[in-house]
Image (cartoon, rainbow, N blue to C red; front, side):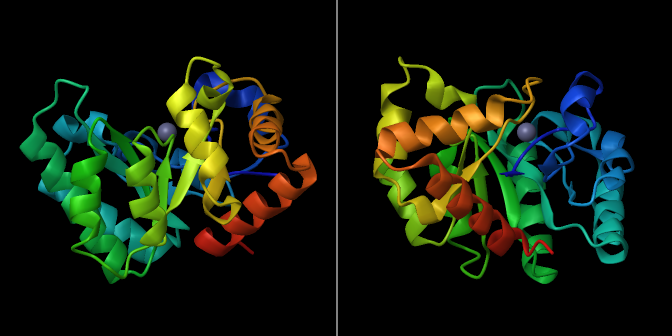
Length: 224
Ligand SMILES: [Zn+2]
């Protein structure tokens, strides 16, 4: 079972790092070295970290991408819930979308209260593919993104019975566009719980969910 988004290099996640097949995104220059310990990693600058980065860091990011074969760029994106200057966020996100296009890599996107702007920017790069991880947009936006060939990542939030909107989206979204993830959760069983919940919502066998989500991750990130 492939975990499409797990921060295995974070100190408290050591326990799940052992036997997980996971895609490990980075959040900024502080862990561009650490994530390379894992077979599948991505380089990027998280929207929460943009204030700590400069143009020089973006140049270095591009150098790393050229030299170290990441499977994706990310995580990057926009978070309008955080009190971080929008223009700065947009600058770093756009720069990373341009790099993804240039090096023909998928993008791992963090979008919180900003899915509309993310879609607007992605439309400027029609050749791009990627994942909106921890999807929290609307049903309409889910359709727009999957029509654009983007995958939607879901994690433990779908187990919350109160998350009726997101559970409805999981139910209706074609399995061909779904990825499963644990993000920064520390429990190794969480990934199975997410897969099981998708199976429950869609009323299909969990094996089918796992197999298709694994295929999706292999195809999107070109995993070997
Ligand atoms: Zn993350």
